[in-house]
Image 1 (cartoon, rainbow, N blue to C red):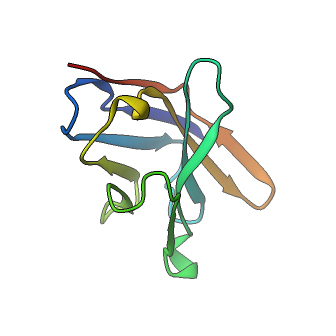
Image 2: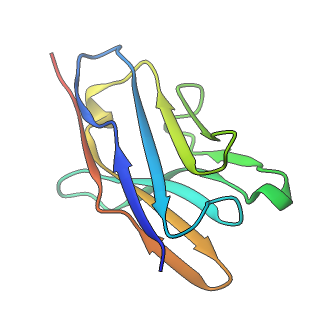
Length: 118
């Protein structure tokens, strides 16, 4: 059983940066497609970034809404997946969730709050 734990959320001023991390207990993430989603109050959950499994070349996909500002990557040990967020805007405020999928199995983290406000 894989458990995902997000960390790194918090309060940041507009234009600032945050780095979120998704760590897996019970297994490494190298064989998983790992995605970051976010959900703001009253809005649907939105997929914003994804990284393919290591054997598939770790291709990344970034949503248009955050392209050029957010990047997704795995660390060298393939244990964590990081979402680096730059030039943050108030509309980026949301609960950010990590999601991992492999061979029909999928897992969600508990979410971490990101608030962009002056």
